[in-house]
Amino acid sequence: MARTRRNFSAEFKTKVVLEILSGNKSTAEVCREYNLKPDLVSHWKSEFVTNAAQIFESGTKVDPQQARIEELERLAGRLSLELEITKKALRLLPRTKPPSES
Image 1 (cartoon, rainbow, N blue to C red):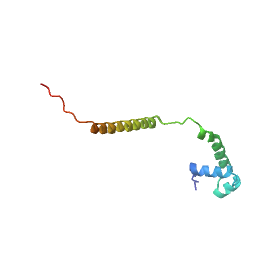
Image 2 (image 1 turned 120 degrees about the horizontal axis):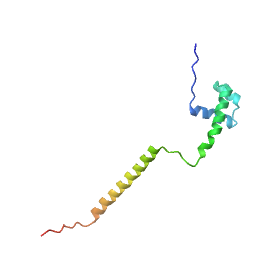
Image 3 (image 1 turned 45 degrees about the vertical axis):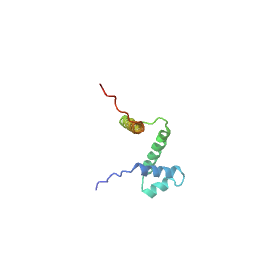
Image 4 (image 1 turned 120 degrees about the vertical axis):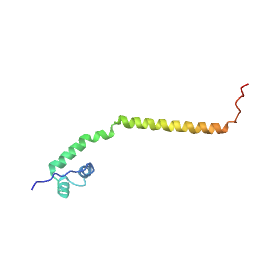
């Protein structure tokens, strides 16, 4: 019978690694509890520690398309506001008759 490979979510991996790093459980305890191999957990832990600095990077990586969408949404909001202000201003101004051409 062929063994099926188990896939673990990022949330599960994070939970396991944080249990070890926080000192609540040892690696052996976590491996027994979740039926995991120690070398797999060790790999997750080293990957977690290596990539942890990326969380605190000041520069955020923004998708160019998402940035363009945000820019257009701001523009649409500003234009909508300007239109509302113009409508209110027109209602406040006295109505004058256009000069008749003779």
